[in-house]
Amino acid sequence: MSFSLLFKDELNGFYKSKVMIFLWIGLPLMTLLIHLWYSDTGGEIPLTSLSAIVVSSLGGTIASVMLTVSIIHEKTRRVYDLFLIRPIKRWKIIVSKFLAVYVCLIIASTLAIILGIIIDFANTGLPQEAVLNGALQSFAISISMMAVSSAAGTLIGVGAPSVLVGAILVIYGGNQISSIPLIPSILNMSDAVPFTIILGAIISCVLLVTAVAVFNKKQF
Amino acid sequence: MKNSTGKNDLLVFEGVSKRYKDLLALNNVSFKIEEGEIFGYIGPNGAGKTTTIKIMVGLLRQTHGKLHIGGYSMPEEKDKVHKLLGYLPQMVAFQDWRTVDDALTTFGKMSSLEKDVIDRRIERSLELFDLTDARYKKITELSGGMIQKVGLVQALLHNPKLLVLDEPLAGFDPETRYQVKQIFKKLSKNGTTIFFSSHILSDVEDIATKIGILNYGRIMKIGTLDELKANFPMKPEIEVVLSKDAGRLNELESLRGVESIKQAAPNKLVIHLDKGIDLDQATNQIIQQMIKLEYRIRSFNPVSVSIDEIYLQYLKGDA
Image 1 (cartoon, chains in turn purple, blue):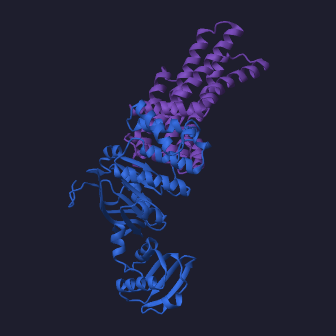
Image 2 (cartoon, chains in turn cyan, orange; image 1 turned 135 degrees about the vertical axis):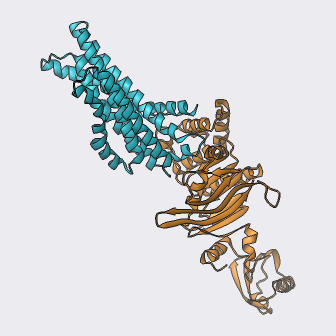
Image 3 (cartoon, chains in turn yellow, green; image 1 turned 90 degrees about the vertical axis):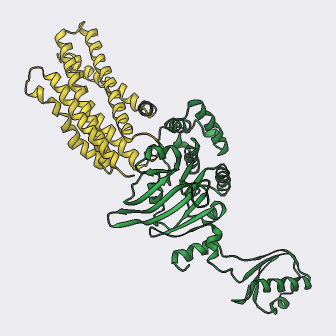
């Protein structure tokens, strides 16, 4: 019960602090801006593919920064004190935060890609199957990378002593770790996407379990 | 667990120590608190009060020693203990996006209360603390004192058996402090045990049924105010409030055993006696003489040692 409560509470927090709006409007808006800029320069790559690239490059960074900053901020302001003295397990606090950010980003990314498909449809009719497949694959890879970024952001948030140190660590380390799931694609492996998803899931789980272990040991 | 007086010890510290690298923040602290007691924990800055409290609520782990709350061991049975306690930290903080209602509802749910119970208790508690108008305001719109009150409400919402409060009265104006102290007394009457730290010694004197003095991480003394005072002789001073001042100080001063008399206020005398004098005998003699001299006495009180003096003596290790 307490996990769903914490998860809903985090989503409620993102909604009330406008984070959700910025994400859900921000990422699709990026797609729209790229479309406007790109059509002016006469580009020929379908916007569906382009929006998938935008999502993959921005989503991970946003996820890790959001989680790191939010956790460190709440930790240093001692917001967690009132949570930790209640009969709830510590892991639920951390995992619910991770999951709330991750779900918000998946929705934002989906909206951005759907917008790309709609614009393509309006301009050139139904996108070709190959384009849709490509976008879907990019989306799957993006989601894997975002999971790793979110987990890395969570770990850095739990461990880093200040927002500044956390931000530096996220930019140095978080983004590099999130590119590990790309290895199967870089190596041109057949069935690269399933490997990417599995690799992303494993790395995310390891990072998240480490974050929970650190948080459990932490004294406040 | 029942103690020798047949009452339950709700809180038991047994040789608890806490070390931060080179600093021994708590050194072999032992004490027991019975159900329904109000325990005032006093000591200078850095004495270890907050460390004690954080160990009690499970935010820190002790390096050595045992701690039992309601018969459960800390930190091993933290989840069970957390159902029993309400906590107000020294600097209470909520997420900026929360409203008062949202914060209290969330914490109520985390303490496994039903929604309708939460609503009822929020309404009642906010009324009690004069916060009804702030219910749907964002926490960031409240003053420091109001946030402190919301902190108290969240600590009380689930009717905890043990209230652990770190400097709960520090941010309040005198009127609110009085109100909050009355609330604490009422809670204690209804069986809630209260452990609170404070720098305001008069507040501790007003409400604490037992006092613990901490310095350099060590308990210097524990007892009721009377037990603490028992180690100090009465001061050789008498405070007299008059309804009619006969203005015959010289004649009073000439009495045997009277060292000097100070007119502290228009109707108030402070009589300083010779050290080592028999206080009872001197008191009788002064009253008789004052009546003879046509003074009218409203009150006549030997001055006892104040909690501030007791505190300072124990800190110095003189007591």
